[in-house]
Image (cartoon, rainbow, N blue to C red; front, side, top):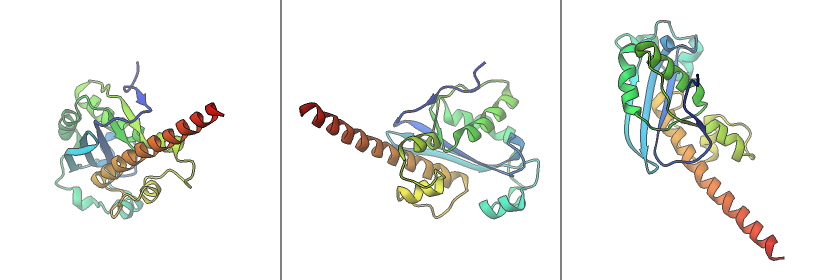
Length: 195
């Protein structure tokens, strides 16, 4: 049985971008520490949610230094099983967007399945996959590098809401680059047809 919906390689205007932070100890829902989603319509943000999540395990020290999230910050946070249905309701039937999205989608999918026994079937788009195809002139495809390349502000990194926003902006910039590259190719082909 298929786990998710379809892995789309296209540009859409309506989507929900997601990002999660974890303790760094596993790729299981019990190690989620922060979850966010931003809903886009016509390429513009229209609504968002973000919450700390209380994990079952402590955060690894290097992850604390990377994200700035500490165990003390999560003491009063809700557990993922009390949040996940609201997150899924927020996403609805939207295409899910993310950077290396299989990781984040996998955690959301597993948390929802663990709580309800139901499977998500949303189609999804991975900005990492798109970047590898159209950004041939870049040293790597990390979100931080893509933000620098496309001049997307990244004053905060490795936090769920900020990374969601940055991922969406990079996606929209890549759409514009694709349109420009397609137009260059069309003009070149038209030129060679005339000679």
